[in-house]
Structures are given as C-alpha cells and as structure tokens.
Length: 343
Length: 245
Image (cartoon, rainbow over all chains, first blue to last red):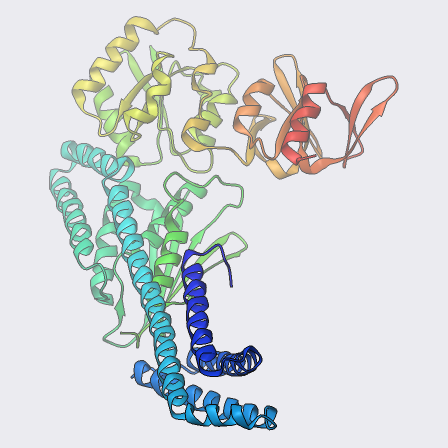
C-alpha cells in the first residue's frame, strides 16, 4: 500500500472510520473493552483475510461475463466464512463467559447481515475498479495505435510530397518533355496516380487491403523510380500465394523504398532487388532483398522507416516478431509476416 | 573553352543539363558520371573548370568527393534538397540550382557564374564543409590513396594527428593523409565516440586503455595500438565529462 497515493489515503481513512463506528457499536453492546477488543480483532482479522482471498480469486481467475455477479457471490462467501469463523472462534475463546455468549448469541443474525453486506459491497467495488483500470488500458492502447498510424501516414505522405521524390520526378519529366514527350506524359500520370493512391490509403487507415491492391501501388511507385534511375534498378518478383491475401496499407511501400534507397545509394551500377511473396500458414511472408554496403551512410529519410513499421505491426497484431532484418554478406534482407486469420 | 563535367546518378537529370548547355557554345561537356567515384577519376583526368554536381549520390556524397580534390573546380550544385537545407550555403556564395531544373533558371545561373567565377580561382573549400548539417555524423572517413578513393570506417581508426594542412588518420594498417583540419574532423565525427584530447590529436574513446602521467611529457593516453598520445588539461576534462569519471 503506497501512502503517497491520494486514493489509497481515502481508502485508509474510510477503513478507519468504519472500524471506529463498529467498535463504538460493540462497546455499546458489551460495555466491556476486553470483549470488544477480542471480538473486534478476531472478526476483523478474519474478515480482512477472507476479503483478501476473495480479491485474489477475482484478480487471478477473472470471469469475462458477469464480473459483478461473480464479485457478489465471492463477497457473500467471504461474509459467511467470516461470520461462521468468528463466531466459532469467539464462542470457544470466551467459553467461560456465559454473559458474553448471551449477548453474542443475540447479535448473531445482525452480524451475519452486516458481514454479508459489507463483504459483498467491498468486493464488488474492488472488482469494478479492477475492470475500469483494464478498460482504461485498452482505450489508451487503441489511442496509441491510432496516433502512431496517423503519424506514420503523415510521415509517409510528407516523404512522398517531400523534396527527393517529387522534385526528382518532376525533374525527370522536364527532361522527357524535350526528348520524349509521350513518356513525359506517362510519367506525369504515374506520379499523380501515386500521389492519389497515397492519399486514398490515408483514409483506409485501420483496415486491410487485398494484397493485389498494394502490389499495384508498389508497381506505380517502382515505375516512377525506374524512369528516374534508368537501367540501374531491377526488381525481381517471386510469388507463391493463394487468393484472398490481405495486408494493411502503407507497410510494403515504405519497406521497398528503404530497400531501394539503400540499394541505389549503397552501391554503384546495377541494383537488383528481389521481392519474394509467399504464404506460409498462417502468415503472408514478404521478403525483400537489396544490395548493401556496410560502410555506407544511411541515406536521407530512412530513419523512421523500419522502426515505425515494426511498431505499427505490434499495435495492429500485438506481436513483435513480424518484422525482422538480416545481413547476408553484401545483401540486406527485410522480412515481414502478416497474419492472415486476424480480424 | 570551358570544360564541364556532369555528375548525377539519374541519367535523365544529366540529359536535361546537357540539353540546357547546348545553348552555351563555350561550355563543353567532357564527361558524364553517375557517382562520386567516376566523378573523382574524371576530374583528375580532364581537369574541368566547372562541375554540375548532385549532392546525394551513391556511396559517397558530393562533399566527400570534393574534399579529396587538391584543386576542386567551380561547382554548381543541382539538388532536390529544399532551400531551407541549403541556407548554410548562402553565406558562402555557392551556386546551386533546385530540381526540377528549368531553362530560365539554368541560364540565369550560368550567366551569373560566367560573370563571377569564370577564369577566377576556385571557391574556398570550407564553404561546403558543413555537410554534417545535411547528413549528421559520419561513421566513416573518405580518403584518397594513390589516386583512388578509399573509405575508412570510423571503427578502424586508432587515432588522428594534425599535420599542417593535413591530418593523419592512423589505423592498424598504417596511416592515411587527408587535407582537412582537426576542427573539421571534430564536426563530422560523433563526439560521443571521438574526443579531441589535444590541440593536435583526436582519439576514439574505445581505444583508450588508460591515462597516465609521464614525468617528461605530462598527461598521456595509452591506446590499444600501443601508442601514447598526449592529452591536454582541457582534453582530460572533456574525457571526464564524456565518460563520467
């Protein structure tokens, strides 16, 4: 019990007042402090013990439905136990005081009612409090997921609208305008398609998309990058999955972008990126491989990338093992697993 | 005849510049390169007057390449960085063009360059040394070795000694010369890993075995490579602060 907590102070004060009131009652009953003390202590100790047990039972064996009823029942049992236990003990302890036994006997029913009421009441309150705390945590968890997702998309959006991608693409279009106008038009169309798709994904935040949709999005992105980097960029796909695969939006594209940046800026010459998509029950596994130079500096704009995606996957699926990376010689490998039976 | 070299990893970007330059008869494109390595070799071979240079390139960036040149030519940066990031350069009157490049702005830039720089000596090299404002701390050092570019990982450095206009970067396999100052090295290497323990020496913290006082030479740091390097009072203070002694 921490007494720095205001709530705990209140509970303690409440507890003391109840005890005081009961003690007064007992004295009024017995007019004998020794009896009051014995009765009070014995009953008190037993009561606390049974409440504690009741609370432990509720905490560790939570019943999903009807927590209130569960608490009530436990409370009643705690009350009964205390009542029976204390009367048995007291009658035995104060055997030689027939006067005490008389008075005690008269109050038996009254005690029972008080015990039951108090126990049930306290346990129900504690159970309710426990439940509220649980709900609060869930709510916060959801809020975190929403915030992070929003941040991730905003970041992604900013990244797409930011210097390198957009300005470089426009620069390429400028070049094509003079040498290959039809291709310039094609590139303009792809860039605007890509921007439109990115914005649209923002509104499909918490859901999943068919894998084919995300692949089309990546294709658009790749077609733009290919025009920019000419012959250097090569993507090879290996696909092995059934229909109906789903994936949350804006996971694949940032990973691919990361791969491309590290690949293109990490090596000179031809860059081959291998994208393997496989279904290994119950996961859709996507594995991306790109060339990697351990001596290279991380290119601009790759900081948020994998960490943010990992976090997002955790918030969506409550697992930390869905995104892994590995280095194999001069290749960098990113592996993402998307559970397929998740709701 | 003004010799120009284009360095950009995107072929279309180079093509655009080439097309714009067709309007300037006195400028001849003698080479096109797609990264700093090719650029380095081409510059040494052709000794150009003017470079059109993208800042972010594969493996080594524009500044790392420029640093290694004994006589860097004039540079016009062509970059997709936004203007905010380039504010650092405004003080140094460096020419840059923002992508997407347009004919008008390109012509203006060339005209300006012709007026101010053609025939004059190159811009001071300090002007583009603020690269860490763009890319953060480096975990490697780019040096020149027998006309080739070489990358030295920061982890391999035993210590760095200042030597007139140069620094000597010592590794297990020998040392490399780099034409720069220790102050500039201080700016580009992570201060949590490298400490300037003395006016002329910079040491990686992980290489320090112990610090001892030598009767004749004062405070010395014994490094793992068995070399002893002097430590100044302020250097000792820096180490204490960093390592929490």
